[in-house]
Image 1 (tube, rainbow, N blue to C red):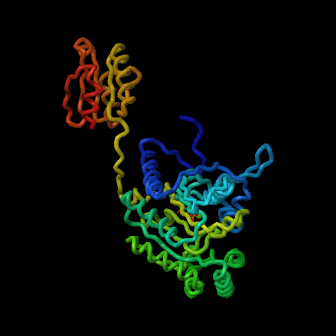
Image 2: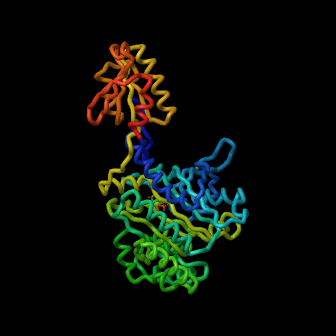
Image 3: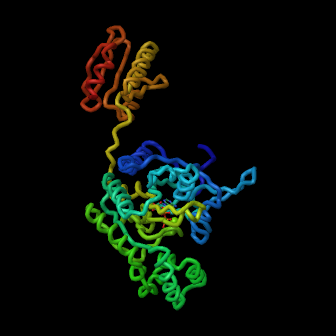
Length: 420
Ligand code: ATP
Ligand code: MG
């Protein structure tokens, strides 16, 4: 055993479980690809300024959770804690928003890094699939993204999740609300840190998980009652569109998101089988972000779904994904000459698109058949001394146990036809 272990708060994805992660990523990506979203990939690190400006100086992500380092060349970089700001940075840098085809719709899949207290469902390295629609203000776009996330979860078989929906208002109505909320919070019995938060980012206090704080928040003013007419109409339209699509959601007047740049539509997907790490995904509109990082006004909306927590949600619901066996045919040679012949056949099968594997290391029949079993292959090809003399191979159906001798030259055609 090696003396090295995966760093605290991280874990390795290993086969066979890793297949589940790939399947989840794929299930989230498929509806996006099908809806005009193009794939985007940005570096795993960015200039730290991008996040401190684009996520917000007062957020937990920036103040506590970022991995910041200085390069030998003196650049201050951060491992990405989220990918919305990087995506917008990339779109602006490449001028995709000037190509005259707004919104720019992109999706990504990748690692995120946050220095957090590790617990089940909360890691320092985790994985998200996300989608961003940049440069258009249209309630149908907000609705599209919510509908697509719902579709992904349903395609995976998930049922015990809920969609929480709220509007955070805009530059016109939120400041009025912010002041009203601040006045309210100043009258409460709160600890010093929370009072400070109330001054910098009062909406975040609504998100406080502590029961003694939540109890005091019962009579807090709600943004819902402060929305300007434009925000109200926008939000009604989003609600109507997702309702018409048959997507069930709950209005949550206290839902705020951890990032500073959100405006109007905000939503979260929560799963009821995950304990305190219940958010499997979240997102919303971020009309102000582009200007915050030096770009033009580009109203946008997006979400990020957590792959790790989605896998945990599947486990919580007892859902076994239907993942086809990686190997269809497993070749078992007994002896030197058989090894050469079968290896060539395996190569040929693979070239023809048949997933095939081979018994390596000169195993005997018993150990090799065990390996064949473990591979999940539907068929085994066994080539022994006697078969060699007869010019045949034993084709064994691993499900029925039935075994037939077939000519060496017919192997590929026979397997192709059997595997359909
Ligand atoms: P939380 O309130 O649980 O910290 P968050 O609001 O910080 O979540 P987002 O920044 O919105 O989360 O990220 C979107 C999704 O990414 C979350 O819903 C979750 O599924 C996942 N996620 C966030 N942080 C972690 C983490 N440390 N470990 C695993 N998954 C995470
Ligand atoms: Mg967090």
